[in-house]
Image (tube, rainbow, N blue to C red):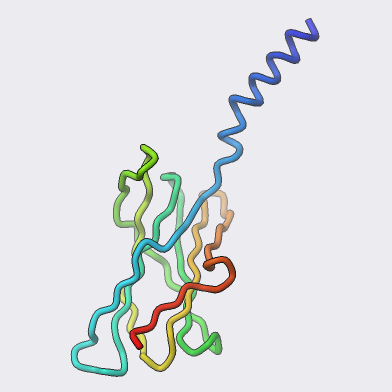
Length: 135
């Protein structure tokens, strides 16, 4: 009986391990700048962010600055669609609102995803922050 119970527990652990190991992943999929209509000193910026796995209850955001972190701004991203990935699964694609930024300094930013339970997963480019500059 003890051997049978030990075997059953080991099988359950192996079967349940993948569900316990799943954590949200968030990455920058694309950064795009467009002209602000004739100004050489500012532009419009949008950032697209990928999230895996597809799950209900996600909220995605970005914290950014373009004055070397003297001030910060936080924006909520909007879900766009789910897309197939190379692993036979789906990724969520999210987009920032259009941000009006100046060319005075590079834009530095980090992105995050909150799961349905409020757990936050950050991606800050391994501590270096993501950077974008037209200069």
